[in-house]
Length: 140
Image (cartoon, rainbow, N blue to C red; front, top):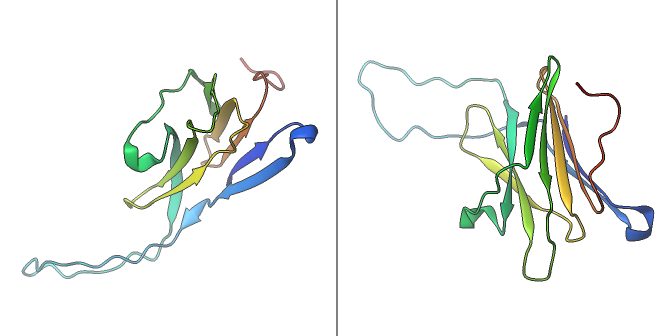
């Protein structure tokens, strides 16, 4: 499961947000393709990745990651130096394999960074929080 956990310091409060690991989508075929017969797949759509936006994603102001690192077991994506304000809000967008549907969620205004770790087995774990970003555990 891919969780976007917005974890601020205890004095700032904590807010947990969850981005589903898989979504179910109902689609309709609106054209005839001669002898080709339409069929439906029974598999769900697993989470494929995330993007971070300044403002609502409908505005298409996607932020480039500050850093992205890969090793033999995972990929770490870091968005650092967020400047939260009343006018400046950030949104996370989760996108999925095999569909154009996405899920959007506003990031807590107190967050100054977001980091996401995508395991090579497909699971994604992330957080947005206030304060300086610190690596946890040994990496590379």
